Length: 191
Length: 434
Image (cartoon, rainbow over all chains, first blue to last red; front, side, top):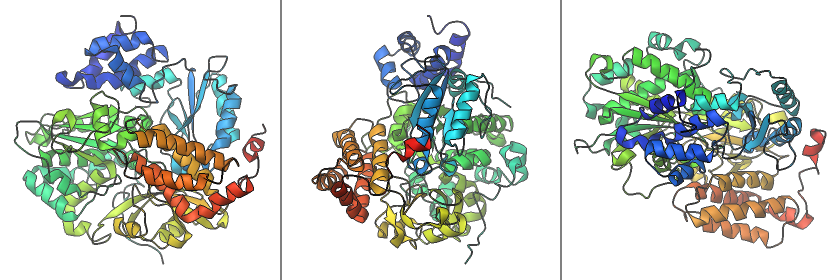
């Protein structure tokens, strides 16, 4: 195996052990996060290997990977910036924040990764921080009450290699690290 | 008039020590579990039934009755699944409840497990709530170390394990059968009912699925009893409800109020009124899936029955406020775009209808609406409502139908003028200096 070997394979086994042996297929979602933490996206090879680990077909893994929006099947920036533009955030100016985020990240219309490989910026559906609209997530960490000016500053700091302090919790620093936490494996920051 | 009552779910919000196990226990935490361990299972179900607690995730189904449906001793394990997939637009009270009081959720879940004889609880958290799931991971580790979870809960000889499972960005997984599929490693598409989850749920075993806020009410009900629970709220909607109010208000936030509290009280006393003193135009009482109401309905009580009488639903009690400067067509277009994005694709009316409705609404808003578009939207609303497998399409229909019912003139004005009467051209681009 190319993705699941050594420590990563050991992590995969630990994830699979969370579920009853006869229902080990339930581990597919955290295993996808684990693979995403290795490659920064889900490669065809990773999907094949997850199928082999769980005893299901690659198509069955792909079916899950393509259903959920937090799995990335295409090349992705080192940092993923998600701007909620659903109604509560839209009413507080989120569309301008989204436009500003894409501009600051240097993304042309329709472009998914900035030329320097640093950023993917997309619109999010409701992130559940409606009382602090507009809400933004940088590598899955929340930033509250964001303005166009704030998002330009956040993107600038990320470009300078800084890790901006989120509104709650501790930042992971990259999309890969956040994906590892999503797999339930990261030693909890600040713990 | 100032609303005064004894806060329940939010009473410890001023005390960050309860986030940790020691602080939670010092404040009386896990007393409900201690008592539940001394009760026959049926008595736990009975007190929750008698309390009249109804599911807080949107449907309002009586919680004790749900627990009572679970068949026992049929040779299969039973499961409790906690639905922390909170994704209804405008809703974030479960998030704050967990951030501020995570052990109360674990305690409620373990009591539910005892009530139905369950040994493994699955806690499904939406992926975007990564920080909140970490708060829970810490609490779970503490609860295991303290003997509140594990092979021998507080020396009772009863096993209750808890497994945290993260979603990955799919609104539909808040629908309980889609959530079960997601937990089983499948695409999150809803299942045909019957069989209902109480009989055949997770891994084809009897399963109770409860919302976070619902379960967090349970410890107090066990300790203080059904009559105490009914002291607040209305006869048919007892207890308090977490309300999220957002959008065009001075103080957006999560507030706990007795069920039946008028919307006006929440808007004026808690949220400080409409932003900038402007006039209220429209509001959703329970997230974007619930039909929007208007300033005429400002005195409607926030409870299941009053909102139904007003033509809407309590839903998740997520109030999004639009003011006189907001365009209803623009807002409806954004809400419907959400349903198009989140449709799981299983049913044609939802998959195709939400996509078409998004296109038609967008062109009306952009000034390219055709005279027939307004009646077309009307037809679409009719053909979406109750025409699909689950309630997601009904959410789409609710946005369309309610916005047309209250603001048909505004739709027609867009078409007549060939532009949005409320939005200055390119305001957004100018604001960011594009």
